[in-house]
Amino acid sequence: MPNILICDDEAGLRAVLLKYAEFEGYSVFEASNGTQAVDICKNQSIDVIIMDIMMPEMDGFSAVREIRKFSNVPVIMLSAKGEEYDKILAFELGVDDYVVKPFSSKEMMLRISAILRRTGKSAGAVAHVVFKKDDFIADITAHKVSIDGKDIDLSPKLYDILFFLIRNKNIALSREQILTEVWGFDYYGDDRTLDTHIKLLRKALGRYGDIIKTIRGLGYRLED
Image (cartoon, rainbow, N blue to C red):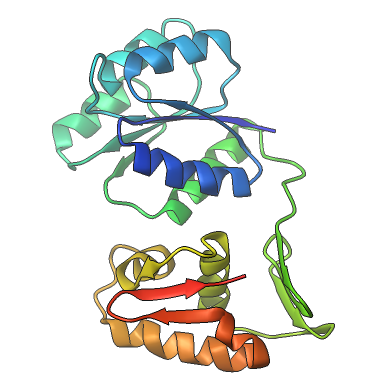
């Protein structure tokens, strides 16, 4: 099981990435500043680091410099801005990837997976994630949905919406959150696109369509 270190002073961002990383079958370590990140890397076998630039005590650049003194672990650098100088400095330090905030968690998992494949440390047998409610089964790992033992054929976007809602079950999600995760930050459409897809998803789920609740003025919530 690959070990991922998430280093960012934003606890909320760490929590979201941790949830996604654990779904992908990774073991996750957390640090809120560069000093903690360096200490963890000295004492643990880390396969990929997600490192923010702007942090208290020790910034991301300084942390990577220290880590490079004893380890060549792959690093994905995070920045709240896409300044060319920061990118150049990051790559001169030997980071493997550079991501500008905001970003989607789904995209980050793909970037981690690509690095692990390149380094030969892919997650092997990942945790099998299945959501069940009576005769409704959504097998996220196998990318399958069934009702009464019969597979339900969904479009790629409907799968993505359903699985995102399941991963965040019983949590009220704004339309913006769902659009960001499913369509990406570069999506410029409006909420009606999501509402239409939710209607299609409810219809496809038949009698289980009502597990997706509308939160007036906000978005949606999937209830187990």
